[in-house]
Amino acid sequence: MTSDSIDIINAFALLTNFVILPALSYGSQLALGALAVTLVYSVLRFSNFAQGDSMAFGTMIVILLTGFMISRGWTISGIPTALLVIPIAIVFTSMYLLTMDRLIYRHYRKIKAKSITIVMSSIGVMFVTGGIVRFVLGATAQKFEDGERFIFSVREFKAYTGLEQGIALKTSQFLTITIAFLLVAFVFYFLQKTKTGKAMRAYSDNKELALLSGIDPDKMVQITWLLVAALTTIAGALYGLDKGFAPQQYHLLLLPIFASVIVGGIGSPIGAIAGAFLVAFSEILLTYAYKKFLIYLLPLSMHPSSLVQLIGTEYKYAISFVILVIVLLIKPTGLFKGKVIVDE
Amino acid sequence: MAYLEGKNLVASYGVVPILHECSVEVEKGELAVIVGPNGAGKSTVMRVLLGMLEASSGSVTLDGKDISMLSTQDRISHGLAFVPQTKNVFPSMTVEENLQMGGFIRQDDINQTIEEVYALFPILYDKRKQLAEQLSGGQRQQVAFGRAMMTKPSIMLLDEPTAGVSPIVMDEIFSNILDVRNAGMAVLMVEQNAQQALNIADKGYVLVSGRNEHTGTGKELINNPEVRKKFLGG
Figure (tube, each protein chain N blue to C red):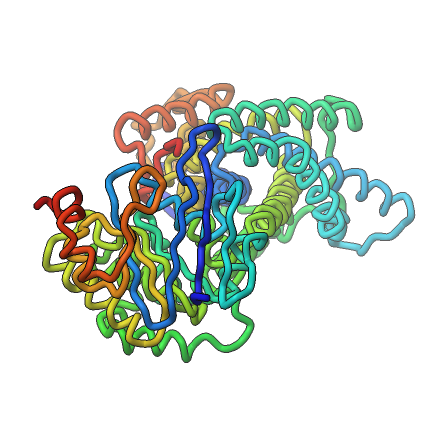
């Protein structure tokens, strides 16, 4: 870094490694969570505050099963064991969510409670779920990633390209982005093209008319929870593989997830995904220290002496809050014109 | 015995009594109209016939069979279809998807029926890829009819199909209803525009406070001085 020439390629490599790849994978994790919140909102008519802790629950099952598999030596070299146990974890999470629905939400649907009442009960579910996770796994952070850590590492990348700045692609990042893409594609295909998916949209659009068309409301609710369980478990497991697992961290994910949903337009699946990437990129772009990046791009005389970091990383949750407030003030229906919550 | 018969229906919302021994009936290929002042229980009759509200006494029979105990969904699969007054389409779905949802309970191929609906309402074919919320009031009403016809019903119940539309659209809707009747279906409708509705009706019921006040053919009711004075504005 002694030369004073402008080096765009290395600057871009640096940005890819520290901003673009992390934001893409974080955005994918948020997108899956946001899609789950959107489905619950559209079909069950409430904002699910238990989403973050449900993700912790799904991840807890993944961690327990991973431990079991490793202790038995049932692993495939190179592949994170967590990936293998996700399908079983989804089954357990589905059972948990369906039980919660049976015990709590169904009652409020039956008495046609206002949306806000159900939201409050979901806060109760949030605390119970968080409690279960802490009871079983403890509150401390843990890692459960095994297998190959990198698709390619910084050193390999440097050796291959001869660049001064390396880019590493972590296995967890690669898996996150690919799996999230496939899962989102599946959910959209399901909602747009299949008879059951269309019935779910019909039920979300107009409950009474859906009933008059012979669509079974109980079945719609169950299918919604199954989809939500899949999205929730996968989002949680991918986030944990990427950043490690800590119950408090998952609990706090609720904020960026809600911000994503509201930025995109609540009730709009496309909006939830767009919103998730917007929140993820804002968080990382605003908390990244640009010193090295600018050194690559600016002549020597203009090199910054400070870190050039707009906001400290400890304030990253504030960014979601600010985005939330700005959207609610300026465009409450969000980017993709979602529904504004109205009690019927 | 008439094709669809609601006999001596008594019903209430909570503790508020709405229907007192109210009876209506309609034959296949016949258009029956229920008129009456606000709060007379017109829409409630429909809800009871459809099983969306439970009657505390009285019976509903379809083709001689008692269907009083059946759920709404079962009555739909027995040939009843209902077009509600408002919220009668799936707004964020396309016209075609609305029709597909109408045929949700059918196990056989529904494309034939979709073609029949397009033949009856050609404009819907042109708009089949558009969202229902983007259509005009009259077109949306056609989607609502089309959706209800997807189960190949033998009887259609319509709740104030012309509420809130312009006179031109109203004529259009009434002509749609006559088309449906002429296709051999029984049609029972609740209407605010009593004069126009009785004009095209084969049979009419004037409901007051949940009781049958007058019954007769459309013509008889229009020519009845008492009905004219009280309900048709002289």
